[in-house]
Image 1: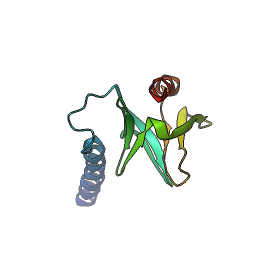
Image 2 (image 1 turned 135 degrees about the vertical axis):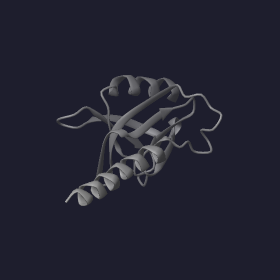
Image 3 (image 1 turned 90 degrees about the vertical axis):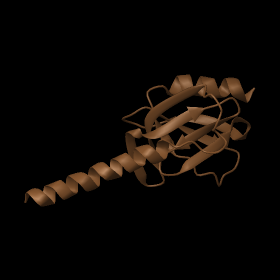
Length: 123
């Protein structure tokens, strides 16, 4: 029994570590830039719900990055609106002018602050 638990522990721990590493990796557009704001949070990507700390939300001067297993880069000028979302937890949904952008819902306790930072940069 002990080897089975040990194998499961290694597999689960390895999966969590892999997600953290992948979400921490910067895209080419981010390299050399200083972020305005970075937060570890959770998010709903399609049907997969990732809890804290598996999602990275990073805001830069001209764009934001939402990163987990995949990375989504959104320029502020393409953001149509930001809505509050979530019944039991605070979150935001970023909606762009492109209906085909599939942006995740972000589970954060700093939704109002993030919204204000994005609105400042949209001007």
